[in-house]
Length: 103
Image (cartoon, rainbow, N blue to C red; front, side):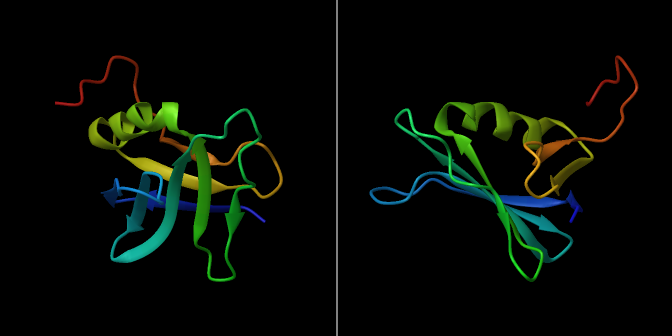
């Protein structure tokens, strides 16, 4: 099953104590996914998933937080996609012309 959403808005949660940083993504007024950033301590990251309602959960190493937030701040349009068991779930830009200035 393949699912893709356009990311229109996001909220960053950088909690103390038990919760690792996460970024909640919205398409319009609908929550469509969350990016969870964890320190796997040498272990594999948890499996990405999608709920019955289409809500996507993706896991990234904590070291990738700055790169991901930079994409969300400076690029558009942005998308989140889930391809199931394939190792290519993620976020990214749409096709953009080379040298496009995002000012």
